[in-house]
View 1 (cartoon, rainbow, N blue to C red):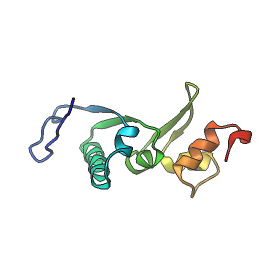
View 2: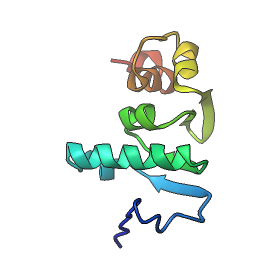
View 3: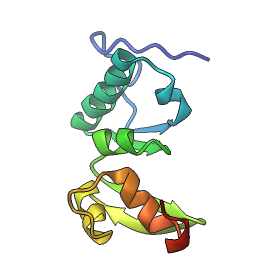
Length: 112
């Protein structure tokens, strides 16, 4: 199923308040322009007051799009907050979210 959005015409998300998106391989398989368009769409919807709930393993997308994140490990939320706050929890304030995710969710002997 394909959903095409024409934001200039205002359809089809005019009356929707929450958007659910399961990303991951979908975004990774897109070219750079399409990835940028997806990120811009989510940011635009959020600016309109819509809630965007995204599940992804692609930390760069989460970092670029999300105001708040939750890291789930073995069915439990192990970190939650703004991306910068989660980085501070992992003692990596300047690090990238992928390294933070790995630090929080893997045992020390598994870390690379």
